[in-house]
View 1 (cartoon, rainbow, N blue to C red):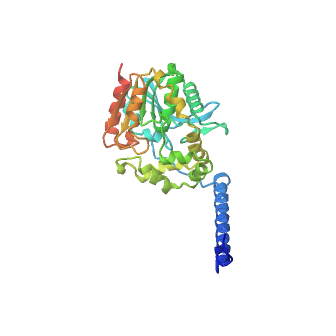
View 2 (view 1 turned 30 degrees about the horizontal axis):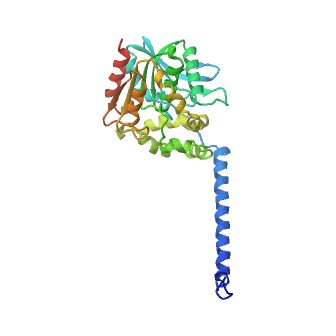
Length: 328
């Protein structure tokens, strides 16, 4: 028990210190309220500008086809057995500008922007973006262009869609090529994990500008000279559109990779897995585990290549794609 003189709360200066502490706590609380309010405004009210006047310099002829799900943007090139190309997250079919000519000599190549990508527009504002919905959307596109069965080449995030199609509708997939895919229920990189957080994911995607996007994209290339200013412009223009910004966090947040992983053992399509050993987006350590999970699959590692390996070194990657697709 303190005496009056010993009680520290009665010592000279104690009362001003308590008042100062209360003021500081109130200030911190007020600041937190302001920050949360600002985040909510950015996430759910404010809309960033869009790049609607950009005109792509890519010479491929754009096509569009309507389904109940979306108005799909795609290209159709070449003649022969059908091959469907799916771009990775935040990209669009421009990513296959060097791949399409390498395959079109022996195949009819359909490069398609799935919902939330490139220049495809979704009809249903409540579209789910989960792996089932994205796979259904891919199926509806194949139906609309008259392709009951095709080989599928998929990169990164949409590797999950290609895998789920092969798992649940094996009759629709001839061969399967996965480039640095998301297919295992493993922790994602920091950007993916951030997209999963409510409010934060919405705010981050809205606050992202061209320079921020370019900074993140640069890490996907091991050969930095491949990421020119024009390449950034090509990717940024459609990504700046409001529906595509929203799809960034929606697809990641709804992505259930456990659903994909537990069915890997049932895949019967001949499968080739390609990975760059300098990939900083999806860990190359996942590659062998994925190979062991898919019966009869083959893994090819590319030394010195990054996440977008087919853009990093098309002269190395394209012959491997063409060779596998050409096997009897």
